[in-house]
Length: 291
Image (cartoon, rainbow, N blue to C red):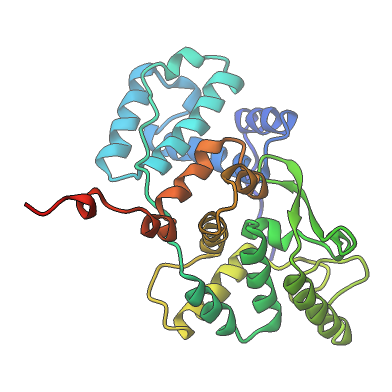
């Protein structure tokens, strides 16, 4: 027996329409709706009856219950859209302030650890996807969104369509990566796992792409098999790509472009984890004359 679907309230539908009009990313829409739903449960009544003090007390409640700064700011963003756009009462958010998110240095693997990690992946599709992520610096969502037609072996580039920020860009296609992609293509085609013009990394059903979650499960399993005790995710390979290029003396603005960063400040963080650069600096202690 089918479970009856819960009707959408006019207020929720209005917010959904407002987000759709602005073509917000589906994940952003889900996060905003979730933020309003959680506030509504806390409030115990319709959110359009909230006051400035209700919102202020909600932020205090989130802080007191141990909500992380990132989650807190995400909640504020969702509520801000609801009150600013949907209700047109932005003044109600006057006493809700985003908090500073502590800056943490990314986990970076050595080149030897990256080689062990990729080699420990015993699934050719996953191994090729991990190789591509490290070779290009693409995000997991960008890796799984690639199609065979995005590979341009003539120009040695990968076309990234609508990456983060809904921007198109090109990524580098190193010769060794192209070789590995060709091996994967031949195997996948022979096994009927890849459709003409289809996904470069299809899921169990070739019509659908592999999901970022599946790739993250694969890389965690590979890290365990490779005896790497650092916390590893697909984004770790992106950090490794940027850091290792910086250690190779590649200009930071080129790295910024390859990563698709809008601001250079986002890329500069890798100067703090490029260990090879630290080793090239002579400490002033070494220059002291013995007394």
